[in-house]
Image (tube, rainbow, N blue to C red; front, top):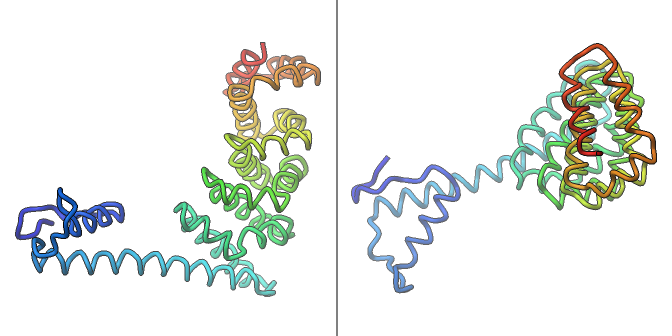
Length: 262
């Protein structure tokens, strides 16, 4: 949509902010409030108000989800409400600002102290998925999760959980906490995470095998200094033995990891 001056209205918050800055200054830096048409000024005010109220609405939605997740309801209907709350939080936390607000509201603490170890697999895997989504590329969230012992708890799920989906989602969350995150990787190594990855590659769960090999490959690309450690652990022999199994797409990632180790 264009205004009477022929300019297109922006559709993103960033565009709105840029438009607001342009409205307040001209090339010489002096105010130009008189140069903006009344129609354009009114549209901008309404759009900015709508954008920021939308953000506030999302924070309120997160608060309501956390209220539901903090309740003690344990019947079937309560479990379904909690599943929906986790799904909505995962959708909202795709937004980096929302992911940070989620932590500030105590959400990460609730996930790691209660839901990551709850009896229902449907809640555990949604929790692991939410932790991963929140942690992607958000240092504040990563640091919060690490301070709460996230890597240790997620490695335990990856290694021992009875649900395939939980194990796959736990690996996703681990990846989000250790790739390009020095403190997370240090914790992963300290907790013998490479051995957990190796065991995941030896399971019968193809998706888990592929994702584990892919993470190993990427860690070796970004941190070649761990090659010596892995060689000392005998992982080359274990990776070679995996290549002797029935051929699958998993072998491609095993070979890539072996190439990185050589």
